Picture 1: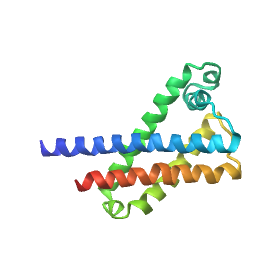
Picture 2: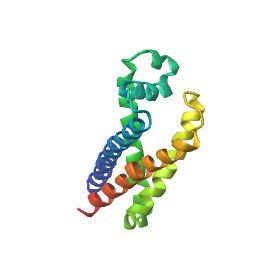
Picture 3: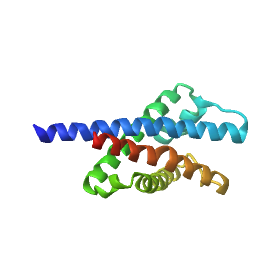
Length: 155
C-alpha cells in the first residue's frame, strides 16, 4: 500500500511538473517568435507539432492544432515523469535542481531535435534560433520541472 502511494505521488509530481514546463516553454517560445517576427500564429505552431506525429498533412488542417496541443502536453508530461523517475534513482539531482534542471533541459532539447529531424517536418535549426531554443528548454522547461519535483518531494 505504501509503495502504491509513493508511485502515485511520483507520477502526480511528474504530471504537474511536466504540465508546468509545457506551459512555460510554449509561452517562452511564443514570446520569442513574436519578438523575432512581429507576428504569431498559435494554430500554425500547434499544427507543426501535430505534423511531427501525422505528417505534413496536419499543416493543411487547422483542426490538427488540437492534436498538436495534446501531443505537446503528453510529451511534456512524459518528460516530467521521466525526470522524477531519474531523480528518484539519483537523489543528488534533487539537491541541485538548477544545475540538474539545466542539464535535463539540454538533454530534452537534443533528443527532441533528433526526433524533429527524423520526422522530416523541420530542418536543422539556424544558429540564431539555437540559442533561443536552448534558453527555452533549460530555463523554461528543465529548471521548472526540477524545482517542482524538488518542492513536491520535500513536502
